[in-house]
Image 1 (tube, rainbow, N blue to C red):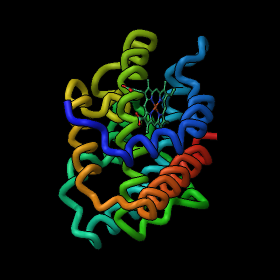
Image 2: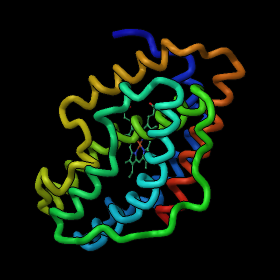
Image 3: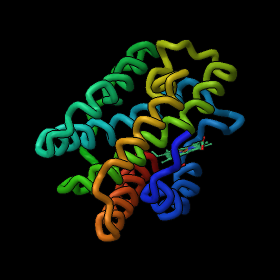
Image 4: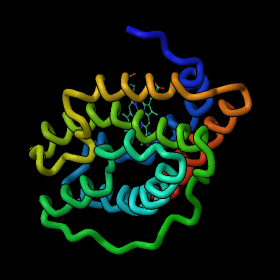
Length: 189
Ligand code: HEM
């Protein structure tokens, strides 16, 4: 296995506190968690992802990076899960702040958060299937890349390792990752 790029370690260290905090706003492992609450979590995720991925799509295209995320969009997966649950996707106000994706390091920091969350997503999906009898059609968002999750995370790390990450850019990436966590957290509250 390849060595982790330095910036990945800085990102992990620089956002650990927010990861711990965001877990507190995810009710999935609570004993009374039910399918209605699951649909509510998906609606909250939708609020964030719809706004975020619209911005992201533009930012990636501006920087000639559209290819790397082309089959990674999460908004359609959330909408499909909600449909499979028999719940229409609600129209919601855009989050009051989203990460500013005005440079490649800023994009990379935000994507670290999004792609990293697919790791925890695997544990969540297992739980949703076991505890709430959810089907694969109802867990496409958390289920993410399924058994390819590890491979896709490795690919992402490789992409990160190829970016020009001097100290200043790494700082920009960490700051953007922190904004991304905060913005999602606002939607999950
Ligand atoms: C109940 C909720 C969550 C649980 C239980 C959870 C659990 C985990 C676990 C176990 C890992 C490590 C996997 C590994 O190293 O193989 C991980 C990594 C990660 N998670 Fe979460 N997670 C949760 C929510 C989130 C959310 C909402 C986000 C952000 C959108 C997030 C972002 C990340 C990131 C960025 C990593 C990668 C850390 C690294 O650099 O190695 N997680 N999570």
